[in-house]
Structure formats: structure tokens, C-alpha cells
Image 1 (cartoon, one colour):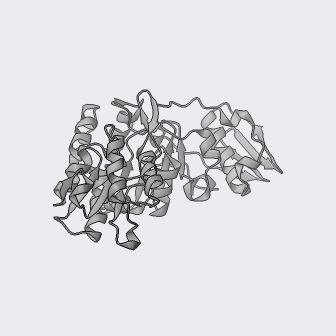
Image 2 (cartoon, helix red, strand yellow):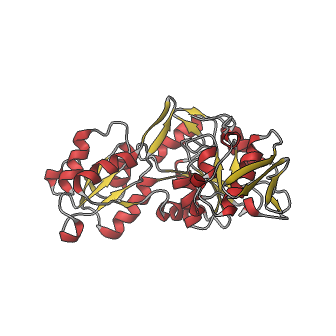
Image 3 (tube, rainbow, N blue to C red):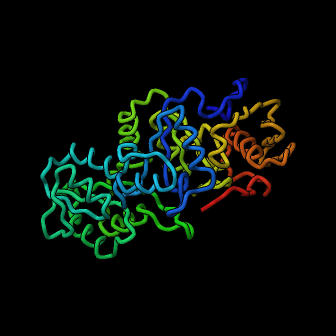
Length: 345
């Protein structure tokens, strides 16, 4: 991984990459508006690599997502967008053949994919659906969750029907802040029925496998803003990843990242896709990134030198903490490492 590379030439995160896969919420936009520097940076990347978009947000169709991205200034076709409902339908086809009746809990993006896959859509458990598929939409109400619970009351191993969730993101960035995501709604149904859903979207493999196959990727780079979905999912399919600090996860989350959720690169914003990425050099237990240096001594995380560049200090601190093998919650971490000057939604 790049954070522990000792003598790697200073290359950009894009060097050697033929396909960039970008998350949307918290990476490209927050709500309707583009995040600073995202559009220009991605358009520049598209001049040399294949660019695709992956989203766990099931509320919109691929065409509406492409239209939104185009309105922000990106060059996007619907086929460039891979959605969690598309991944969910791939899973559904392996379990229940069309034209079975599916209880849909979600919005237009999910309904569209269910219908394109040849299934019959219902909104009522009284229609004896063969399965339930659940995805995020702002209009999902208690009555919709109740219908899911009614349909899923019998455990699957006792003859009950399958339940697929497009994703289980706990939160979703909006222009006014962070709001509950599909994971919160799925959890409500789980609490009612005592069952777990099969998940199609990040961090599970199906949505990544769909994207890699669709774009013919040989060397892909995934860009996300969440460690527990974006970065974990990229690690599970064995591709390099960027965590960009313009969305949900903050410096404190980077320092605490468990092994399976550690990114290859940490960027303050997407301009840094095109900048040489500094190597981490370890010497006598001190981890150096440019002018920043951090070490772990016993239960103390110590800042040895501070260049003033918070992103370099964060990279050095993460490298030192991760290499120590000690969970961050048992360490004494200087507040300076938690400083967060990066743009957030």
C-alpha cells in the first residue's frame, strides 16, 4: 500500500491506472451542488483514463444521475453509472427468476431497475411477493417499512422469502449536513423481524464486480469518502483506493481505520489526484511525510515535527498508528492530529 511504500518514485495516484471509479455523495457532490474542485479534477482525469461512477444511493435512475452529473459539467452517459439497484438485480436473478412479483421499498431508481429486469413491482405485502428489495429514497415512510416487515415475518430458513438491500450506508451527505441513510431504514426492518438482509452495494463485492466488468478495467482506482463502505469494498476486490476528505469520514476516522478499511491514498480534495503523492519513510520508528513526522511511543502518539501541512501530518500519523498495531482508542493522541481544515458537506 502506498502509505507504507519506502522508496516508491513520487507518482500521482493516477499513474498506471486505466479506470477510475468514483463514488458520488461526498466525492462529486453533496446534495445538488458539486464539491469544490471535483468537476475540474475528474474531467482532467477523464482525458487519460476511463471514468465511471458507483453509487449506493438507490433513489435515482442511472439516467437521472448522469443528467445531474452532466449539469455539473461532467461528461457522463447513463452507462457510465453503476447503481446499487443494478447490483441488487444481479443478485435477485440468481435467486428468483423474472417475472416474479417483488415488494419494492424505495424510489424511482429501484423501481426502474426492478422493471428493467423483468419483475413485477408491488408495494403491498398482501400481494404475496416472492422477495423484498429495499433501497434508499427520501420518501420512504414508516408504512413502507411496515409492509417489508409484514412480508418478511417468516424467517427464510423456515420458508420465508428473500430480502435484498441495495446498501446499508448508515448516513448520507446532504447539502444541509449528514442525514440517515439506507442502513438506518434496513436496521428498522431488521429490528422488527429479526432477520438480516443480503446486501448488493458497497462494501460488498457485487457492485464493484459489475463496474470492473462493464468498464473492462485492468488497473482500477476507486475514490470514496467512507472507510466502512468505499474503502473496505475496494480492498475486498483488490483494487487501490483513495479516501477524499470532502465527505463523511474525517481525520479521526482515518487514524482509527481498521486494517481492512485502510486506503492506498488519503487526499484533502480531488486536485491531489494529479499531484505527486509523497511517500512515507520510516526511520527508527518515526514516520516521515515531507516535513511532518510522527511516532508511537508506548501509549503516546508523538508529533516529532510539524510542517504545517495538515494532510501530511495526517498521513504520517496514520502510518505510525497503523504500523503500531495498537487500536487508537487506547492511545493518547495529540489534538493536533485531529485538526480538520478539509471541506466537509
